[in-house]
Image 1: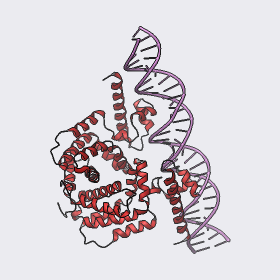
Image 2 (image 1 turned 90 degrees about the horizontal axis):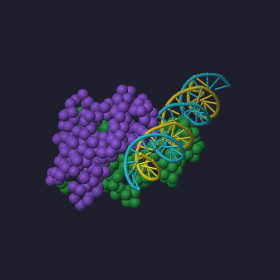
Image 3 (image 1 turned 90 degrees about the vertical axis):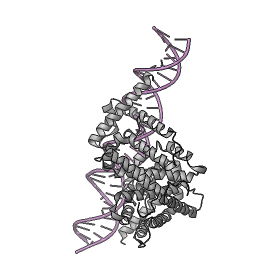
Image 4 (image 1 turned 60 degrees about the vertical axis):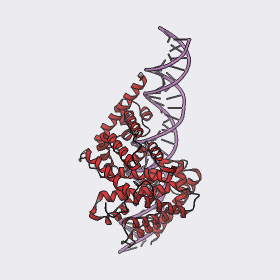
Length: 192
Length: 192
DNA sequence: GTAAAAACTTGTACCGGGTCCACCTTTGTG
DNA sequence: CACAAAGGTGGACCCGGTACAAGTTTTTAC
């Protein structure tokens, strides 16, 4: 990795951590991009060359995490039934998000608008995951692919919504598992 | 209904229809709020007193439609099992959206950001629906309530995604029904 | 019918996110 | 060392959204 790349990564991380510090201290809306840029020692323009939006600085994945995510999808345990494999992937994703999840939950509670904008950036891994599902769906049934993707996403989101940051992270993993199990097993049944 | 209210409703509808005309002609991003306000014969400030955001002018419901929506939720067929009743409500909602759906789909294709912001405004009826589900969920199980809500929403969204505006509206209703049936019956089963 | 109160509209000024661009500095290459 | 490519910077600009004071219309009460 050349000097150039190293510097970029370092700058990325500086901006990210500076931003998270400011935001977790003062709240998302009370911190402007100018504040973040100034505190990180770069210009506003440069900030936007690293992050496509202000929200992205909260939700984007570190390049290292992106690599983990790709590894997760490349895991060759293709013999598992779709929904079980999907649960594994979701749990892996949960672990990726572990570190920032408490902060993100606090932000969600502050400003519900952030909830939806987080969907935008989560859609960053959307295409990958959709393609992953598609490969495991018979007949290239695109309706079913989309339905599986959206439903799994909904289950995951539900787990995030339901999790209390004061609870243990293990509990969050259980929630993810439960939500996916319920959603996968069918919600039309009166009890489960 | 007094003069004041009548005028307000009329203004609302003028702005809405003017906006939809402009936007469907030029695209969402190519029309500014100023354009809409000017073409509707009101000021920018007034526009924002009718619609909380630019997106809202596309997604908000006419007061009459809001009434229909409330009627839908008040429908006393409470004896149906939850998921069937939910399907009915979804189909009713689909009919409410019928008129603007083709336009909305075209806009979604233009700018995927709109997709997520539509979730924001759809969350306008979210609380109502969530409460409706909650009343039908035993033990006030809030995790399950949220899961049902999010999953139903995901199924509905999937139907919108999958529908081709060139297809008949009936076909859309079928998609809604299918998606809810599949999601409700359990996606973990290899085939359905 | 008229006067005061309440509701609505408007212009203006402002904030902050996001883009564009021309200019400069740094890094990689032969 | 020279040159090209990549990256950083400031400034101008657009647009969505808010706040507010001042003016206009509708309602209400007498």
